[in-house]
Length: 150
Length: 255
Image (tube, rainbow over all chains, first blue to last red; front, side, top):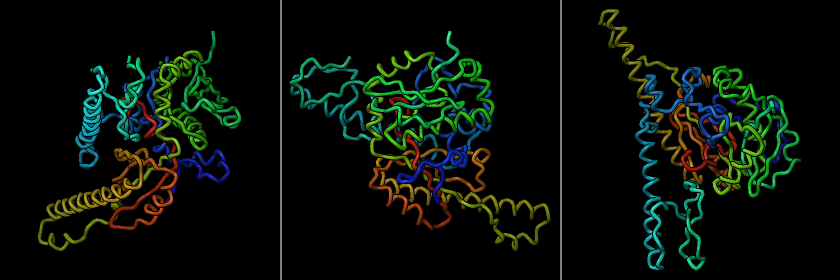
């Protein structure tokens, strides 16, 4: 069964009422809990709103906050527990770190100066990479002098 | 002196043209505007400064109807865009005092946005939920409780039901892991989320899988086939999408 989401390409754009049929929980989950967080000038941190309606809070509350509130349904599912998610996150960071160390070692032979702050690298894992907003270090292009992280 | 502030929906490539947003309706029925600052562009609309002030937002976000209206409008703009081009969705209620401040954001985070857009270029997000029905309470234990007192019998029955319920969920969760792992092989990235709360989602069955997957165009047919044709064990799958890449067009520290 396929529901919600965007229209399938090739079809005309759907009438507006189709939007209404998309499950509200699906939409709230995305617009409140996913998507890029940017510090706007007028920013209300959604997770900081103490009085947020319980219905919404159940959905968007961070794990820790929910636990404080005595909500623990995810604890019963090991695949959803925070422990496993943290582990996955740690694995990801470690993989990145290994990539950085290997690249740094490769760069040493070229007389490259070390930059302690640099922890990003071209690890070809495009889908999960953390973005640093800096120029990538490319050992094979060392001849381009003067490229340095800020 | 302006009574309006800028509500930001998403960031996309700077080649976004007015023709692409002409027919979009934004929050409060306003028109959608483009603020381009190559190589990226922001998609915004003007909203009432008072309604979207910090204090009003705190109040309004308590109002589920207000929240639903804004959330649906927000998602409509983001989804329409994502249907046409790579897009990096921004969280609900990200508001700037003026256009110049949005430009400043685009300038300072340009590289981050470009990288986020590159990650979802030519790819789409699909979501799969897995449910398990909990409708048939066990009757097996009934015979063995005949000799017990009514109170004891009741408690035994409740305990058997609870145990059965737990087993049911556990089995379905194992099945959910298995199908998730199958789907992951067809996709470029994935995220698993906690099950949605029944009170908000309205689902009667227990949700044991709530996951998002990022697919290259070429993988969609096979991915959909696997989900649609899944009829195993206790688990019932539900596919939704394609969604704007809410789960994958993310910036550093926002995972």
